[in-house]
Structures are given as C-alpha cells and as structure tokens.
Image (tube, rainbow, N blue to C red; front, top):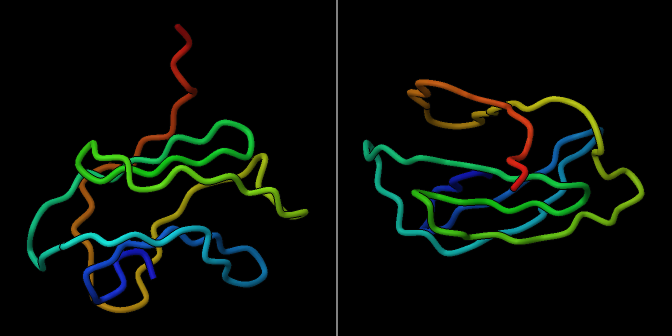
Length: 92
C-alpha cells in the first residue's frame, strides 16, 4: 500500500498479516524523487515525505513492534531506492 496507486500514501505494518496504521492524501507522481522518513520512539511513529509530516500515530496494538528491522516492500511497480539508514534518535 505505501504509495497506493492513487493520490495517497500509507503506513503499513507487516508482521503475520498486514495492518494499515495510517493513510494520507499525497499527490505523488510517477518518476518523481521523494525523500521518505520515519521517526519511531516506543509506540509513536511519525512519517514524513519531503520533510512534511504526514503521519503521527501510536501503535498500541498487543503486537506493536518494539524491536526489529525495517524493509521496503514493493507489491506493484518499482523503486529506485538510493539508501536506507537506521539510526538512534537524536537526543537534545
């Protein structure tokens, strides 16, 4: 679902099954380059496209992911991902 073929972007958690955590309107265009970012602190997840906050959600489900990995999953179409970084949150 990520960028789901319409004028929307979605945040999906995939564990044993798919869970839609958030969806927002976003007028994405095929071939355009976008900077995607997630900030995760505990059960709070903030999602950005080109530095614009699109999601600020809390995953209070019993299967909330407190540790684990990250993946880019493409179910239709393609991606030209240049880099993926995982780093600890900045402390200020």
